[in-house]
Amino acid sequence: MTDLSLSSTDPTRSRFLWPLMATLLVIGWSSGFVGVRYASEQASVAVLLFWRTLLSGVLLLPFALAFGPRMRLRAVMSQVGFGVMAVFIYLGGFAVAIEQRVPTGLVALISDLVPLAIAVMAQPLLGERLTGRQWLGTAIAVAGVLIVSFDSLSFGTAPLWAYGLTIASMMVFAFASVLRRGRETLNMPVHQSLCIHTLTGAVLFGICALAQGEIAPPMTREFAIGMVWLVLISTFAAYSVYYTMLRMFPVAKVSAAIYLSPPVTMLWAWALFAEPLTPAMFLGLAVTLVGVWLTSRG
Image 1 (tube, rainbow, N blue to C red):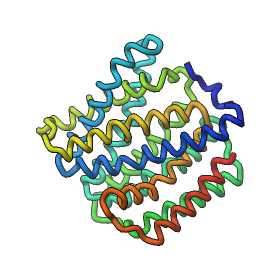
Image 2: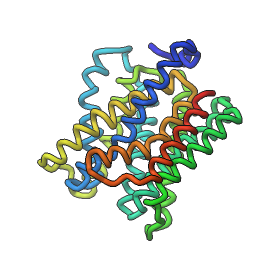
Image 3: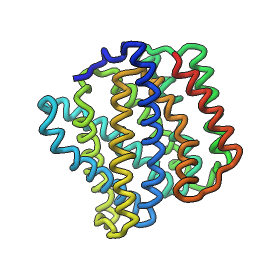
């Protein structure tokens, strides 16, 4: 089983492995927009997230039981706690914020500041200190995200607690990432931990959906396409690559790649939904790339 010793990966191997895994992470992370775009008009957010997490967990369950070490109760309960933070609170918090009419652009911007929160937490909790060059790269990457997001930003008229929920969801996910990196007991194979996380989310999202009086999926082509996309790419690809990278590289370096999510999301929207691209988006992408390069070099 892979453990935290992989953080000392051979430099030659890292040189090629890091950009490959970072690319997969950005593609998977930004792809969530596509699945939600297809499915969200067909069902409530609670129903959408319930079926996303349930299908993901059920598909992983046979592999989690058949392959890997025996899952003991203590380890499972630890993973349940991380499922609450990294799946239920993170995904659900942003969904509730959007339902409360926090502008989507503002929600996306706050969610994409996860790497900044992780960088701040990594030093006191893990002793992973960023160099001056990495802090400069972080500042440049945040500037790139702001450039990309500027046209879609507004503050809206949502209740104050909804804005607080958005920030809290981002901070909880950042804390879960740092804590996961720092606890060796959590290093069960990725397919097992992700199975527990998604099934935990499914139980909680199912309770929310039932409380709203609806849990059955709409039998439409759009919802089916959205579910396939969300399960295979936005969950399996994004979360599994992210969890694997957390065990191989410093947490701030891993999370820096997420800064590229906003501009890549814009490219998804252009390619699949013919949404326009603006010069500001390309400028933001270029600035973000420079920032991520500086941050990941350390």
